[in-house]
Each structure stands twice: as structure tokens, then as C-alpha cells.
Picture 1 (cartoon, rainbow, N blue to C red):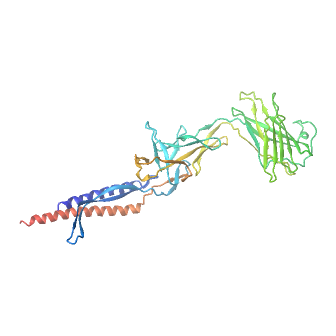
Picture 2 (picture 1 turned 180 degrees about the vertical axis):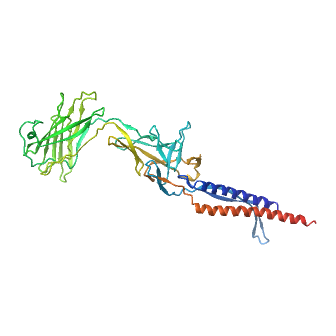
Picture 3 (picture 1 turned 45 degrees about the vertical axis):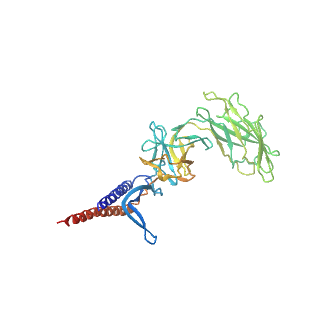
Length: 437
């Protein structure tokens, strides 16, 4: 009979633990990225005896010893999103965890669903506890380089010297304009058909003006001369600044030459372009302390010559110094910095980790998880592979408050019922003792 006391006591302990888990879930209803815990009860067996009847049929006599909380399971279902309008508020739409590195000496990597990040004074992306977000650096072409490391957004961009100029569609030289045969004179507008300008930058970030004077020199050969000036003049020592362009009878470019370098173009039956040789490379000496000369590779691949209006559209790869204005994050985890010099630079790509058995990750507080010794090494992939990154959003707790209230009532009643079994057992013992009276 005394066994009922201990059986009831295990029920009290098990439901007390359940109440603790429920309380923890409710307490974290507003915790970003929190995943609720679910209690798993196991039964205890006090005695188990199997006997056999005269006919050989087995009979079991089993008396339970109560219950206990055998384990808890994390519910990793997706939480709802809330809008913050902050670009470094990030949420994972799908599987996985953000990877953050401890700022302390242990240098451990932790995993979290809480994407409440900000940029610190050093340009590192950190969470609210100072843990540094992990990702890969990107090169100029947007390719990931090196190992996973702290994501850092440069607060400024150093100047980049212009090295390449390209003329893009719909750049067109009007084939119907008059042919000019007199020598070029920049001060005489009758010596050229068109003029246009564009900026170029030296190694110190100083802006210079490139002026292009277009002269239609041969209608039959469909030839044009292009004179390139730097800041309105031809500095002493300038090389290859007079270019020659030729086109075929369909207005497609066939050659671009500066007298030293010549790019030649051919076309197949489908009109696909092939190119050989070297693009024109004019160069201009500089005397302002910047690296000299300003040497430019000029691509005319997409220039046409048809009877239509003159259109000038060009791009160059240089820029002056720029300071960080804002940050954006794409759904594939690419962090972009926008700078005051007009540049938008792909800086880094976020890493996302997942586990084969995420249920046994260990909670470490601060919305962080660590793998234990039985957890396989995480699978780390770039953002956008197993989940999309939502910028300006935070994942909310996935605690179902109404369900937890129902669990709270159930746990309370179960606790009371187990307490009642103890008091009932006490009453039975008292009744037994009263037999003697």
C-alpha cells in the first residue's frame, strides 16, 4: 500500500516538470526565433510477473510505478514573421540556422534562428549579444572566396582607377550624316559630327572628363574617326588617342583600332559575333600625383552604324572614394553595401547551417544552440539553397499560446489528481489502522 505514495509522487514530479516546460514556453512567447519544447512522458514499472495457467496460457501481472519526464523535444516548425523595416533584421524562410561566432576567447560557432542583427563600429554584423554573423567574402564578380568568416561591411570604398570603358547598346553612329574631310579642330564644330563626354577616375579618386569627338570620314568604307581628349586637351605624352572604327553593310562593327591595337569582328550566318585581336588602348599621362598614365581599354563591341539618331551609352569601371550609406540583403543571402559614390557592392554571402538530427541540439541561452557530441557536423550551405533569407523581417516564437494554456490546465489537474492518490492512500492506511480499535 505504501507503493501508492511513491507512485503518486512520481506523477507529481513528472507534472511539475511539465509545468516548468509550459512556463518556459509561455515566458518565451515574444522571444525571436524561439522553438517551443514538448514534453515526452515515460512510464515506470514497479513489478512485472508472468505466470502460466494449468493449460499453459501466459498471464501477466504488472503494476506500474508511476511516470517521469523521459525527454523533451524541440518543435522546429516555422514561426510567423513580423515586419521591422530594418535591413539587418533577417529571418530564414525554411530550414537551417544562422551561424554566429562567439566574441570571447573560446571562439566557438553557435547556431540561431534569431536574426536580429546590427552593424557595429568595426563594420562587423553582430547579434544583440555581440556574436558575429558568419559568411563568405565575395570577389568583384560575386564569387565566394576563402573560408567562412566574420561578415564585415566596409565603411568606405577606396578609389578605383578607371581601366576599362565599354560602349553598350543602343550606342549608334548615324550613317546618313555628312562625311568630314578637313582636319580635326576641337574648337571648330564643322570638323566633327558629334561630341559626348563621360567621367574617368585616377588612382586618387580625382574625376577627369573624357571627351569623344566622332568624325564620319568615309561613307563607302563606312569608316569613323574618334578623337579622345582628357579634360579638353591632349597631354604631352598621350598615346593612341585617335581611333578608327569600321562597319559592314548591315551597320555591324568590323574593326576598332588605335594604330597599335586592333580588334577585329566577324559574324556567322546567324549574326553571332566573334572577336579577335586587342581593343584600342589610349593612355594619358597625369601630373597630379596619381598613378600615371591613365591607361584605358576601350570596347566598341556593341556599337552600330545605321541611319538613325546618334545615341551614346557608355560605362566605365572607375570611381572615387565612397562612404557607406545603407545595407541590403537579398533573399539568397547576399549582403550589399550602397556607397555615396554610387557604387553598390556585393560584400558577402551568408552561411546557413542545418543538421541531420537537429532535435538534439543543446540550448545555450541567448537564442543560441550548440551541437552535442552525438550530433553530426553541420551541413553549411550559402543562403538561398535550403531557405530564403527575408530582410526586414524577424521570425517570431512558434509557441501556440492557446495550446499552452490548455496544457497548463491539463498539467494542473494532473498534478492535483496525483496528489489525490497520495491522500487517498493515506486514508486507506488510516482505515486499516482503525481496525484494531
